[in-house]
Length: 351
Ligand code: NAD
Ligand code: DAU
Image (tube, rainbow, N blue to C red; front, top):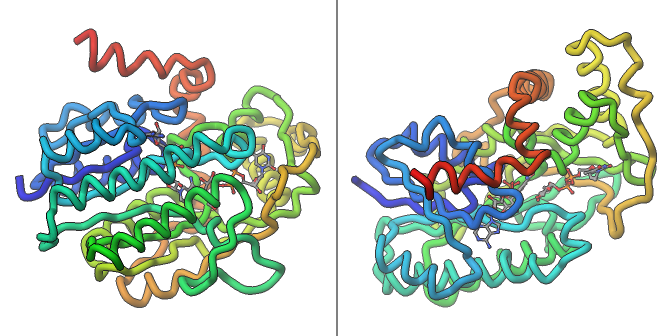
């Protein structure tokens, strides 16, 4: 094998798309997917590639410094693509410490292990940290986040991601570690845990459950199809200069209430319900504490320097996404019932 690449958080939503892309596109790499399998980790996301010869799964917790160091010494990874994180803002409001432990301490454990095994010999090595646009805080009605926007996180989630970004830069500046960071906007697509807005709405509409809109639904997010994020990660991993940061976004801003109404209209059509049926499920509920008003990304640096651009329009991406959830009711049923958590034992322990 030409390279050993460690992808953390590969059983999660975005990580599973990145693992699939790398395993299929780079048979000359061995891809190690390291994941703790928290509630958000689902190995059923990777059924189609799990038997490929260039793929291995490692169950481990990035909070566990000894375990991480041993794995780096054993496998001597050439590159790290770090996605493992606690990722849901609402959960960070109820349990901030878990976000500090995984997102901050876990990231520092990985940085230390990479530094230890690479020992100053950084040729062809790379530590790529996947971050979020939420580190920049909230925009007013105009303007876009650029790579120069000062950090101003508001939620425990975004504060933990901002802190981890600072550590990654500090390891580059202090020890010369060959790092790169990208900050992406809201992703949507197949395999997303239905606690996040789009899969939650799709699932609730299917079962005629309430669609909870926080506050007045005026908050704005910039939505990107997850496979376009994975393609950007591939480009950045291979082509970005060390120490750089890239913003990734869809140039696709939607007010939450408008997006939810759009989802209702598409779902009425797909489920052959009279138009207006699903909108009746909308319920305005108490706002999220510290709810950021607007995120919007300027991705021109990535587009101009590395030639990336989104491959689908929002209409195409949403159609693909909704079709995927409707044609994978078993995946959704396993996720909502908790059945998916047995998959690791059945697939990896009992065999
Ligand atoms: P996710 O919650 O779907 O997946 C996270 C994965 O990390 C899960 O498989 C989980 O089991 C694993 N994990 C959690 N704690 C761990 C630990 N201590 N040790 C090892 N593994 C652990 O998240 P996602 O939405 O796929 O996000 C992936 C990354 O991308 C995160 O770093 C997130 O901050 C970032 N991001 C997400 C979005 C988005 O819209 N979802 C946008 C920008 C950036
Ligand atoms: O911007 C990137 C971030 O996008 C990522 O870093 C996070 O990991 C990811 O979870 C996402 O964060 P958001 O908080 O923007 O995503 P979420 O899907 O939770 O919410 C999207 C918007 O919809 C937000 O304004 C809150 C609102 N919302 C969400 C839920 C779950 C509702 O109105 N009702 C809901 O039930």
